[in-house]
Length: 237
Image (cartoon, rainbow, N blue to C red; front, side):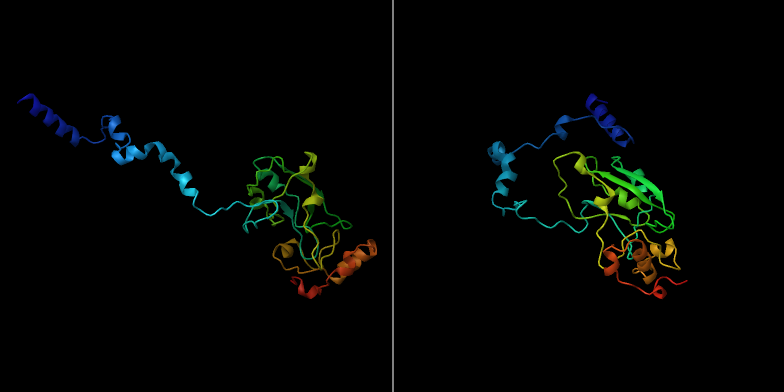
């Protein structure tokens, strides 16, 4: 058998082998050879994207003179929400602080008492801070919140002249009082527990809650604006 036929036979045997790595051929993996036309435009080929963009409409946003609305699910400044009767949703569980990858949230819980009930249940968020110098707006904190107390708004203008001003306290994060709410602290709706609040069965303050606040804080402006709801409509068992 000649040398050429032996080489051909070995090549056929190599093709029948499984799992064998083919010999590295740098030319086969390199770029295809350009033709005459490709060689002509090769020096300016890198400007193709730039040149094509010159004929597209200008989309420059004139911020801050013209503010374009964000997407509905945009992750902006955080907000601590309230229930319909004015009690705070935050229970001081600190799950948001544990979930934060940037260690930007600090929470201290406090115990609710008969004279100072800030949220349904036993505890509330006594201290709540978010350091926006660290926050990366990932949204993991709102996913960890078991009561939907913490959500994110569409507000994105978070700048200031000092570093201390970018550490938001609880009063900076609390949602504004909506029409008909009664400012905390005050007792829970009579005949309900924290589960009724979580299920959304509390739709507003009752006359007993308004009277409790009126006796202890007669100058509270929310006493006059509270929209009273009958207790029978509030999660009767």
